[in-house]
Image (cartoon, rainbow, N blue to C red; front, side, top):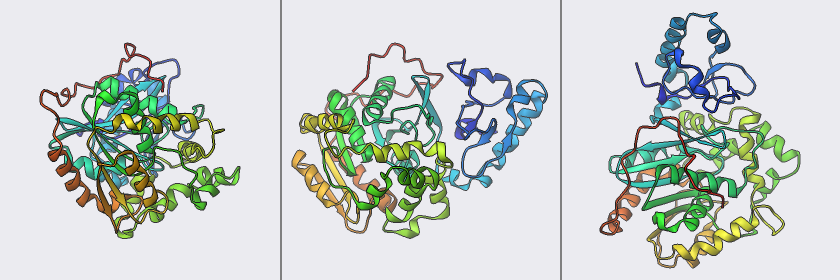
Length: 397
């Protein structure tokens, strides 16, 4: 039988338990995880196409546990046929509990740690080709921001830049990552650099893709429309317009957006409540000093000089209509010695458009900028049980 941790199973959350999975040991499943199922009280296969099974009846004893185990095994066998995109994402899920909510991440390979931080409206699926291409030599840590991907999507959460930076710092501390190579795309650049500015001693190298971590008043009209009161929320959360439009607006090589790739990018955002973070990210772009995240972004910008001694590489899709070449040139003011690769035929989803070239560029950059002597790469990943981070210091921004 396949390891059930390869898949993401939905079960009803028990609010009286810190780790709801502990309530279901008799189901015969490995690493059961609660998930917001858009109001449905079910076990479900996560994604746009679902099979449902009433779990409460099984727990109440109305179904024999052996029958539940048999059903689980059957669902595991047929799951790749139901959700073909899973074949593109053959990774084991891990979770960190943060304030009672589950923060999902991948932990693949061994060696020097590479921290890949996604933007909006993507998730860890966006980095899949880099994970596959680099995990034989490096340790790839790939989180999903709260509200994104396979992380929880609470309705009562601030979803501010400071929260995302704080969550990432908790993950870094939980895994005790040191001498990290940061890779950030879109919002992942500001979030990842926010963590690096706060703890520069943990980071050794920077790789940035079509992103920003400084104040700017530039915003494309199509994004401004998504910030419009009522209309913007209906479009982003109701119609999933932001994520769907990105499938063709953010790439220059449209043939890369196969049905499987499109399904994978959209899978976690399959209903109104599961799209909350997409909308909140759009609203959290700070254009003026009155915005709640303006001071956080200003602090990150002012702290970039602390990272100036670290080897940096900027990989830019030059057909990006959002993070245009202007943002690349702005980064070069902070990192004038950075290595630059301008990919003329790539758009905003630069990794989708050019992942074959990018894997080689990253590999070569890491080889030419080795860790200093005496610097340990990273601890060997330990077995991941229910996390206990009660010992962690405060990680607020």
